[in-house]
Length: 154
Image (cartoon, rainbow, N blue to C red; front, side, top):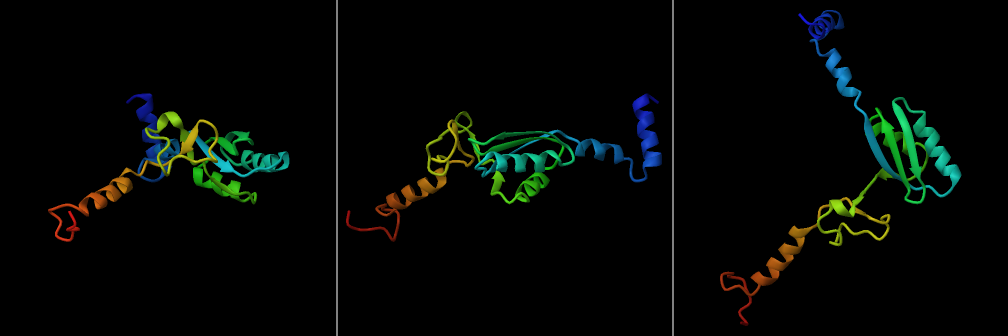
């Protein structure tokens, strides 16, 4: 029985439960990066958000870019708890909705391009090819010979 197996055996014996107590703690303690869009106008707003988030349990660092309205939180805190704490400051908060141009195949398609996005970013949404193609199909089916309800002008 190796050292790892011995620790697992002792954990099962004294941990009470099914021997997964050690595994649960390890899964819960994963480092996360949470990016938020927070409306901040001045240094006071920035300081208020930074103080609220940096005092959370499990938060290692808080980086704020007021020009982009972006807050990056690195640590072990869950995304939902970080979001809730940021909203408790009274600011308008949402999960960072933008991705870099390089990650989107069609950055100027309706639904992804956003004038309010920071330079080099587009909205995090897949292009709506299905909506465009459905409209196109409806127009072409209007004059299709196989369609019983089609226009008979042609």
